[in-house]
Length: 266
Image (tube, rainbow, N blue to C red; front, top):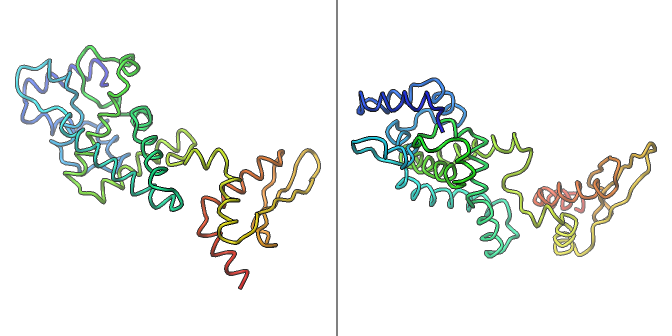
């Protein structure tokens, strides 16, 4: 939420010049900087304003002002489509049921709240005076709803392609701060060796093998081999961690692995 002094200034400007409020808000340096980070500088100013106004903010003004709830409705569908397309392409081996479970884990309010916090939504959202930083915990959907409203505004103003690009930036900002992959499939991350083995057996009819070399000083070099072909090696202080890293790398790049083996076997 906007700091109290900024919020009061916004209210004062809205009372004095309601028609020019959107232009005033979008030209503020902090809003311009925030939009630049998201690649959304060309977003329609009125839709942007609507996406940032929580219903509690409208309770403090005496004239009609659209808040974000209708845009949330649209943004929810937009977000579902974007994430569905990404995981459909990213995980060709997953069934419809598995894809549905993965999508549900990515669009829940807790996950979206993390995305919003990583992209500073709490600094730009217009809320009523009863909301402060503590309200984020009491109202976990506050920022996730605002994120959905913003995507709804992007869809109407900029179209689907630019909206996808903007959401990619939102995800990238979260990944940079969290050092995690947003689209990670937990079943793959928990057991990458098992997933890789299942895929290799299905494609090539034999198991992948790992062999290690003691480098001394508690360090090991572990290599991954399929059909007598060494694919890559990893070094570290734990054989299991090295094996897991190799399995995760090649499972997430299965097409590359398939082409590599096909080329070497010909």
